[in-house]
Length: 402
Ligand code: T4K
Image 1: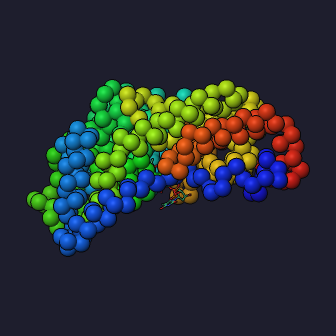
Image 2 (image 1 turned 180 degrees about the vertical axis):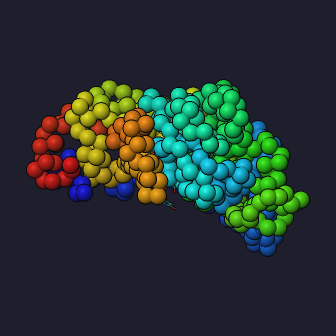
Image 3 (image 1 turned 45 degrees about the vertical axis):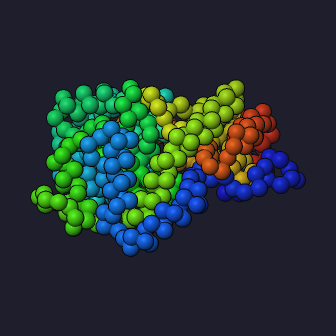
């Protein structure tokens, strides 16, 4: 689709593109020192000293018994599903990154997609309870904590306990969040975090599984590499999902920086909150159910009838000014290749997911922005709303957007 300029004849509002996913690079001198240490020790891989230090720091950070660093969150989710020996059907939200569902496919389980709550976009306990009534062979609940917020953990725990099935969390987006003062990382049977380049806590590439369950932790250790695993625990399959020393070095530096990163994110989030507040038809999602958030995401919804433009029309306008806002989870997983066999029936059970896939989007938030940039982005959105009727006509004439 062609971008559409709102500000005619001038350069884009931002000289360089502002992507949604942004990176937190540690200061170069500290990184150089850390890499020098790796060279001096001549130890690159295989559960090295920096990985062990990182795991100890993460155990403290999360307040959890076991933290295992892995190749990325997708591997971590696959490992937990396999170690829990899931079979048959597993409940999960459709409104998530495709990796959540792919992890189930890798271990031979079938996702049963559930709806999310419209106010929070988190997994709906009512929809989970309904799925448990519909399907007798559900073996687990995979809940996903989205947008620096989290699910209704206690309600989901109650449902899982009632049915005697494990509950575990895809917390790829929830690093640093807390629920009722307790850090995310110690809920359910296990939690999985992403340390991808664009995440608030980055190892460049990487992830981590946390659990208070000794037996599960031993199985996961056995699955990760085929050596240095301590006592072998059967049954397991080896996946070789290691974290290297170089990744652990980046993660340790970013962990040191986390309070500063979180504070910067919060200032940017607050600026979005203040400046989007008066714009008809735009709503910024505040992180749900948390007593602390990483404020990594500026997740919004747009009501086209009120705003005057559709989500995709607004994204084209923003793109033309180098604001690369995105519709993140589109389409819902129940409509994505490989998971769409029951798309029509699923869609009927997932009215909120269907709706928010059409109206939700992410604005950039992270290291490349300051508060004045956020004010400029919000002013642009406000102008688009005021001039929506003309913009709509021009876009229709130019064939810019459906
Ligand atoms: N569960 C949930 C709920 C998740 O959100 C994710 C991942 C996972 C599970 C799986 O976690 P991992 O297995 O990845 O650890 C991103 C990330 O790749 C992915 O981690 C994330 N969620 C997903 C929702 O988004 P993309 O395709 O949007 O990001 P990417 O890599 O295209 O980067 C975004 C922007 O950042 C680009 O415009 C370019 C820029 N960029 C990116 C990288 C990597 C850079 O400037 N430099 C870089 O090095 O997927």
